[in-house]
Image 1 (tube, rainbow, N blue to C red):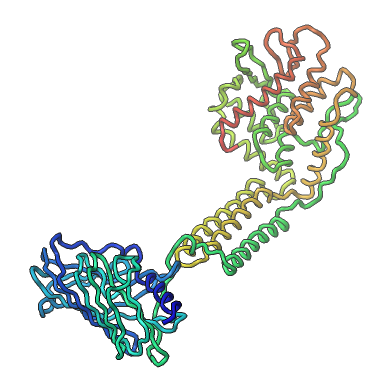
Image 2: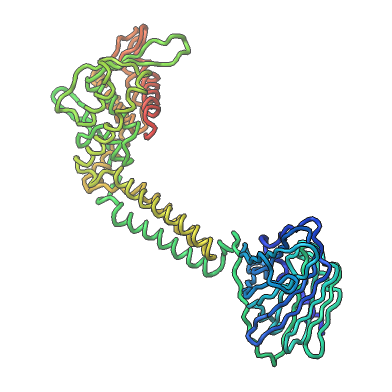
Length: 561
């Protein structure tokens, strides 16, 4: 027999003879159970069924003797070979075994008989799926001796396999590659095996090849063993299908944004919007389209957030609905604090979100301190945001509330992510297409991300956004120096809330400070006043600190911002 012919079946035999984990353990026997003799006879039928009869002489130390038969053993790195065992019976000393049980366990069968003292147990059973195709042709294999919890001093096995042409046999503990003590193939294709000193839990496995004259057909069954590597197999089919689904998901998200999430009109660069209206009383501040600071922030980033509310409060102060009083610090390096004083209730000239903010800030009195606002504002901020979102729809700048649009898209994306998680688990458990589920998860993430930019401005909203861009360029590049000295303070004050929402607080606070033309302490400018010996030239630092502190108060008060 060629070296290749010997080694290839041997390698296959080693893999076939290694039970998977659940069968690695053999049944526990009584401490003084002893097997004194073992013999087995097996015959392969024309249907590919191996009929096995085992005779075991045992000196039982207890009243029950247990052994196991494997129904699933490792075949290769990815697959297990599955056997089907049927017609199992047992006799003890020539009589049907008392208390005999044939229990199905993980990847095997556990056989139990009642016996005591010296006994002769005869097991009979049939094994299907023992004939397999290989590179060497058809082969028959079965670990005929297996699953005993006691050592066996000598085992004799004979197997009748018609048209058998070659034979390999291994024995020892699970995973052993030690050849059997003696094995030969007789002229009548009868296999004779003798094995000395089989350890507890050991086995004797034969593998024999069939000639071309054999009529028995291959019937071996294999099942893929679950593993993380197999569940997420990366091959042409799994990668191709995953890429297709992910591509379709991303394209669907892009298409939804293209058809539903884009602004109805284009926003041009435009020229800087000079917010100055020249009248008989001199130049006055005039925002483009009368837009207010809170609206500016919501139109720009499609979100009603902390800076929009802070800018609205500054705007209400500049418009004489409240005044901001900077309190003296307790120590030189103590923290800043401010007192807010409501000057009037406001009427229909206030937009609903502006009125809601005033009522929220002054719900507990006409005078409040910024440092104590956190807990007081907590239950009231949602209404301010609701009113601000509703306002940009009422103005005709959005067809639907931006937050509702984002929530719909995000919810749909999260639902798709959840479906992808379930699909990933199912596919990973039963197939090799776990990557397909991951692709669905990524498609859901893409949909959620697309939802963040999904709110679409109307044509009117896009036009307003363009004018806001022009206002931002003006506030960034220009100053109040071109205005008459008598109008600079008021103009810079009116610009300040818009500058705050557009990230230019410091610049326009310094514009206000620059109107201080003497070294004397100042009482204030109507809407903002400081402590004793406060100078208007200090307002740059004061306002920057106020915007930061008040915004931080809102953030602490409502984590949703």
